[in-house]
Image (cartoon, rainbow, N blue to C red; front, side, top):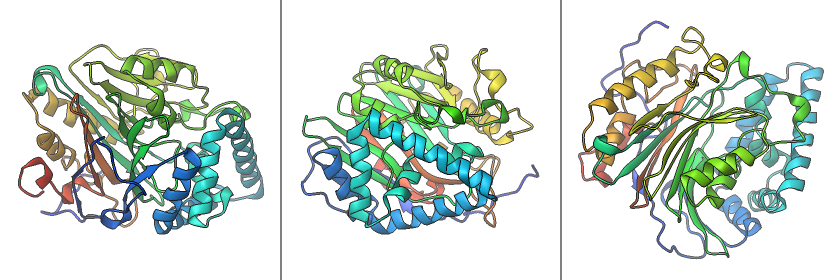
Length: 392
């Protein structure tokens, strides 16, 4: 890829600001905060679905339109369209049988948003992404030990999406059983949030690993989650170790990189395939982008020639974390805005004339405090005043 020098202030799709979302009790009924992108939800999954759908109706409609465009580009002929529809039907049957509550939440979203239930299924069961490896090319950073403040673990994430990328929302959830969590997810989606933290002090994030060596067995569409169901893992886990065990037990037909940390100091960098979960060596810092590094999984990853961006982001973030001492959340937020390798090889990524990936949000979890910071849009254009630092 030819290097491109970024302008002094690269264009941002969604200029915004970092905000903090704790897990203190929050108000009921749900309320919309800035730009209707920050929502409080409470009640049963079906009730939360209706609240989510009603509060984020416009963003959900935009996301449905984006997914329809992706599907049209993917399914260029009747045969490919028929295969896609068979996969969606089989996976919908799997979700309905495996987790009726989550299926009811999807129905609630459709009701609240006045949307087609099948369109909401397509948002939540992203066969169109995995079928053609549409890059969910995210970056994840774990910072602890001498690299962070004493006793503190930081878990950061950027979500980068290509194609007709979609709008995200922050959901603060409270369930009837008392469980609470905060997630960042595609508006209208439940099953694959990119990051979040729960009231047990568990934080998690994900990033995709796509190559022609990670092909999905579509004959298994009725037997596992199309993407790892990170929402279910976050809702249930009470520690990083339990999160990993729940992941091992979860039926799935594709893999991801996942970062997990907990309030007790547990930290795991996980490489999941459709069949296995590997744990990277223990370390005080980890960078997980879009390739595997464990000896058993590395052969499945894209090569530097196939995806230069994943390796460049890994190297840039790795050097920064190695040099860091007592890194603060604000300093980590600044790193997520880094443009070394702009526009596509940088941690903060920018589409140019509609080509490539765009950073659609960034988040930072602080443990054991339980603070969770989020900005929707490019972190380079986000005001960092919440960290007590100068804007941007």
